[in-house]
Image (cartoon, rainbow, N blue to C red):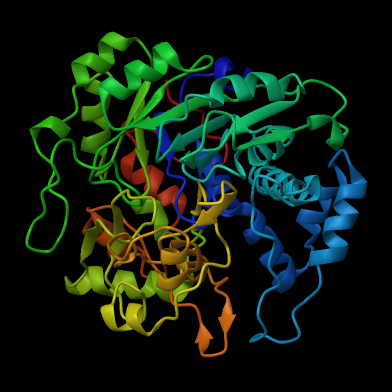
Amino acid sequence: MKLWNSRPHPWLIQGGMGVGVSGWSLASAVAATGQLGVVSGTALDTVFIRRLQDEGVSPALQECLNAFPNQEIVGSVLDRYARPRASENAPYRLLPLYSHHSPAARDDVTVLAAYSEVALAKRGHTGMVGINLLTKVQFPTVPTLFGAMIAGVDVVLMGAGIPRAIPKLLDDLSSLEAVTLRIDCVGAVADRCERSFVPGRYKVSSSLDRPAFLPIVSSATLATMMARKASGPVEGFILEAPSAGGHNAPPRGVPQFDDRGQPIYGERDAVDLEAFRELGHPFWLAGGITSREHVVHALECGASGVQVGTLFAFCRESGMTASLREQVCRRVLDGTSVVTTDSRASSTGFPFKVVELEGSISQQSTYEKRERICDLGYLREAYVSPTGALAYRCAAEPVQEFLYHGGTVDAASGRKCLCNGLFATIGLGQRRKDGEEPPIVTSGDALASIRPLVCAHTDGYTAADVVQLLCPHSTQHVNQSAPVPA
């Protein structure tokens, strides 16, 4: 935590969005302004190998790979995956699905992918870079963390669950100690399903800096539990309101829904800022932050700053395809943009925000036309089969397969394959016999707030434009050498 402790905390943390929307290019651009740039750690292994199949090894990537401590692993991964597809319409080669018995070579790809993403994000500036992971996506967690740490990641952010085990994992990984992460498993006894990881395989010669850890929470109660009962030190919290994009915490109490099927949040879901202040940890407010006034208000409330996703998701450095960004911007300009909190979309059981767009699986006709398949498996859950064996299932897989795996029709109804959809959003969708996978775009409720940026920059706005718009220090000019504001 050398860099995190040696300078004032950033007033702005960029959101770690989607699969590859918050890619290294966006994180680097934000970090260059003096704020905390964040790469999405979700499914980085598949992002990495699909880029290799499309683009090969760029000079910048090669420079990063040359500094990886175990060159045998670099060579092995590149030999297998850095080969172009036969044609633009040929399917991408797939990684084996993660499980409790995946070999160490499967982790090698994840370690190298996370290392490369963070190393690329940290090139060319002295700013801080973080990585965002989903607690629900468990199998890649440890190798992703370790790869990011080899590259010098400054901060780890985690949401979509309660990541109590992560602080000690960071401690142990920084000391190059072998670790074990227990995997959630339906019907399993303690320690039945777990994954071990041995850092020695990667030939790191000395201990690594431990990154700061910032859990993403929805309440002071959860933050208090994490501060007191987590496995190690927690450096701060991201306090996320239900207006934020991506996965949201479910409402407390008996679920209620509006006439569009969206979950209704009530008084019990309101944030207790006084409790956060009393906790004594730095915290950043997230969800619906769209203006300088919002940032100033957050600082006046005792927050160290804010986390912002939606404004960055549609900037030029975003990993989202240009065509999707342009489609969303047109809808914002003509006043027809709609964001729905879909309580059924994600197989995690968490509500998930979806932008309604033609040709995406937000459309019922597109969703029904798509053949259900689970060939990436990041959101699969482990369970104990009737024979006592460990097995895996996903509520978005073919319904008959899900029923065979012990699921129910109700649990499968309306589930969308976020894995494949989010890859299509960044132009890496799998090619099927009937065409490319349809995308799914997520955004916070305040999508219309990008309108001033879109109007002011007809050729597309940049990450630096967002930072300038939000900057609470009116005399600061955003540039490559801008200091982190106190």
